[in-house]
Amino acid sequence: MATLGELERAVMDAVWDAAGPLSAYDVQASLEAAGRPLAATTLLTVLSRLEKKGFVASDRSVRPYRYTAVAARADHVAELMHEVLGESRDRSAVLARFVGSVSEEDAAIMRRLLEGAG
Amino acid sequence: MADALVIPMGAIVWAAAMLWLVALLLAWPVPVWLARASWPMRAPVVALLVWQGVGLAGGLSMIGALALTGLAIAPQQPLLALIPAAAFAAYLLVHLAVTIVQVTRQRHRHLALLDMLSAPHPTRARTRVLDDAVPVAYCLPRGAGSVTVLSQGLLDRLDPDELVAVIAHERAHVEQRHDLLLLAFRAWRSALPWFPIAALADAEVAALVEMLADDHARREVRDEVLARAILAVGASGVSGAEVEPAGSTRGSDRFKRLVA
Image (cartoon, rainbow over all chains, first blue to last red; front, side, top):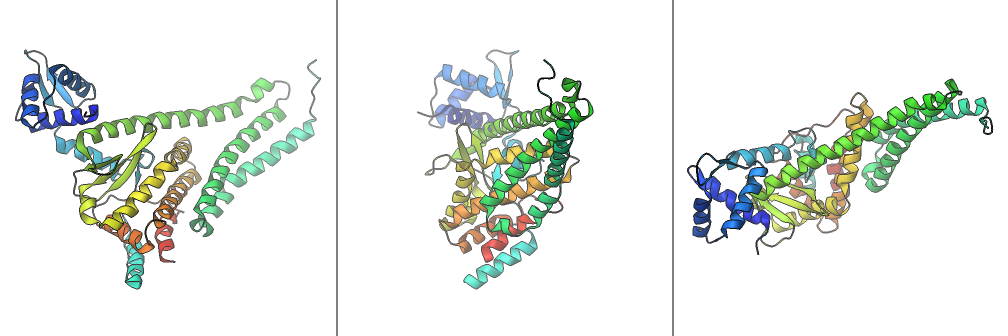
């Protein structure tokens, strides 16, 4: 049984891969084609969660409703990496990174260690 | 019976003076000495305990000094006299609360993005793979547990031993709840932006926490392996800038201790 997070990701992938706005039926068909059939009620729940989180927007002037991605996948990746790479001031409190950028000086120190060991 | 409990004025003045002395020592010379000392890089656990002690005792002695000074100035109106101390304490607590809310909100957003953009690691639990060429590894708390994120660029660049080092390092952050420690010092820094020592303490604690996590990794891999992993990730020229505040060189110490 896939988790809700996994379902959201599968639905988002379908929305991102589409050329234009999708109805829930389109999303369902796309998921089925990807080998991931999903009940309509579950799909609608996932879509409304995604809308609440600000990942998809729905056009309710037509029936059935049409869903589009609020931002491209690449934009979201950029937002994520922006936070990870420390351009936002508070990031060290949000997440703990393995290492930031190592200065030339420090890199030289470590290369010496590695040469000594090798 | 208002005069049942009368403390001699001399004692109040004396205690206030002593608390001011302690508060001033903990606010300036002690942190500066701690940041300059070289022993913390050899004993990061002790150093972190000392920093927590300095932070806590510094705040409490300042509140106490304000309270006693107020009582010394206006002994007839104790409620009025305690206003400065109460205001300072409330100011610090509000900043802690605001920082917690901000960081929690940012984490929620980050985790929601991660759910959409990363896939679970095929074999490792609580680990996700982000499809990006920049080599990064990080972890962040999620509920009672946490999630470790590795980028595809990192997986491509590191050999299995180096990956063990990275994961052991991140796991230490998670298991030892370093996020709570960092949060407290971040709150102190945001409460006192005009106070350079708060920024210094924040930077020192952040660097010491990295050393602690490194020590965890060094139990599983040789120092050379950890150094190789750090170089592969940090000296790749694509990772973001890390600006150290003036006065703290603890970031470099992290690498020097691998050489010794």
